Length: 118
Image (tube, rainbow, N blue to C red; front, side):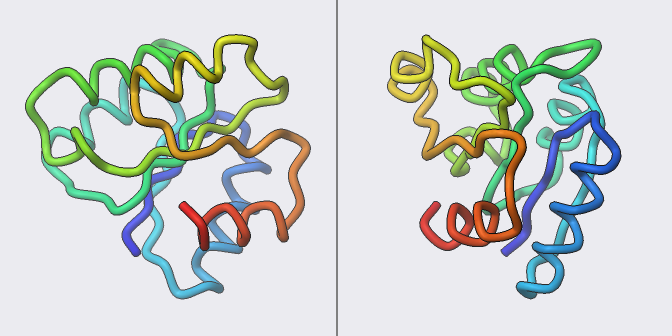
């Protein structure tokens, strides 16, 4: 699968990238929501892994923009990354068709299992 990871914490993005590449996926890393929105305008992905808390444009704003503007990823599967289970996750899941959430700190197994089921 072609997967974009939007994560501003370098160690997290490096770990996720290593795990996904080992699984045979193609991985693109961006570090904020603005970069995610821009890359999603012209590149089609199979999965978006999106951290909720990022600089410039946060993950929720980026997801909203991707879901509501014409681009190749309007219907792409999304898995959120978060240090805390957001109270509004059920609502966000319904509003933006979010497939799942990976809570930080995460393990290699957390990543592999979520990607297999997303």
